Image 1 (cartoon, rainbow over the protein chains, first blue to last red):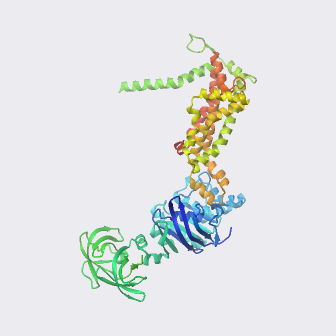
Image 2 (image 1 turned 120 degrees about the horizontal axis):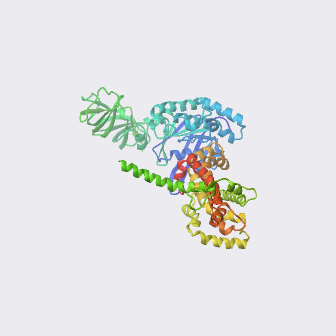
Length: 354
Length: 266
């Protein structure tokens, strides 16, 4: 097995099951030693994409390269890729040690050496002393760490995680997420990570590949996706942005003057032409005030109000349409039905090219 | 209230008699030296008939030996067919899957006697009549239903993701089968093997048509003994036949997972 992390490249990959197209012409490159997430709602093709990397599904069309080598037609067993399954898929009839040592033993490594390798990886994930247990005797979090140790033991070129946090309780999630990121950095691994949770994706990734309906909706850094969504879907899926209609009235270089609900703003142009355009507004970019502020503002009326401890969530009816607003100052709460003024300081608003 | 308890007691007693009565009768006959009509219990107890049954050159020992050899052969043949068939039926997307499963039911759906008379005629022309191999073949047809249905259920109950994890760790298809799939399906396969073994041990009609008079098995011996009025020999033979059945029930109760049972025939 070759050492070191490898890149993963998809070239116009298609996967069909009969009449259903699960992955439709997907191309991307994941740089070696980085963590990329495949993000999207259920059924968008992200898990199929992950399984295509592992070789658990074979591509109908297109090319898959790992570390620059074409592996499109190679079986799962021949790929230097390890996967941590959503269900963990630990062998229930083997001990923790036997589970972790499965890879090297299949590989032909002598039992003693294989066990030593497995012990080292179990120690790495903090499970020393659990070697003789059966998987059924461990908690969900511990089982996952066994699955990680088993996946790491062959020091694969690429490590895959399928929804690693989905079977853990809420408190453990943040920690496991940080552990995975830490492990990836420390061991310099190429990691591909599938999730449907946008916050999780933004928190751990170098690069996020957002998928929708079997295609890539947008790929980029977390900041890119959040601040410069390429289309309605990404704007809405990442951070629940309000997608509203606006009028582009003036272009100067790469800047554009846009009017929405009577408020004029200067935004990055992003290739838009004068006329009607679509604008994404982050829910926390909208400022609410009881009195008319000095800055341009539009009147609105509070629909629903919810108190969430750290912030308030409102729906506000206004000339801009129905808006979802997050207010970081829960001490200043508006009641449902209250008349408010909505203003836009300018950040967290972007033209959506579509 | 009180009446209710009496009725319950009577019903429970009746059930106990229905279940255990014949067994007690059999146990008594097994140890009765002499037991004539008016006596409610054996007149004299002893083990002389046991000695006669277990006599090294006796009829019974030969029958027991035949029965075990035939049952063992039947299990081997059934598993040789059922393991690949069960795996294929559980894992591959086979067209007509349920039809294939149903086909194994056919030998049970047709009246046995009609089948066995014709089997006997065919075997006679092939020289298989009166041979152990012939009896094994007849028992295998009978046993395949259980063997294939149960192993299919056992393989279907093994989580596919475990096989994928093994392949992901670099194991080829055969390696995956022998290190993951087979060990996890083993309890169900063992259950089907025991079931086939017991069915073969118990089988009467097919053995009668294909085996007699050259191949004697325990059920045939039991039939001969009880038809000849020798209830002691019949009871002892029945007891011997009972032991593996009880062992099997304990095994199923202890080891067979509910999810295997649930997938039976599905």
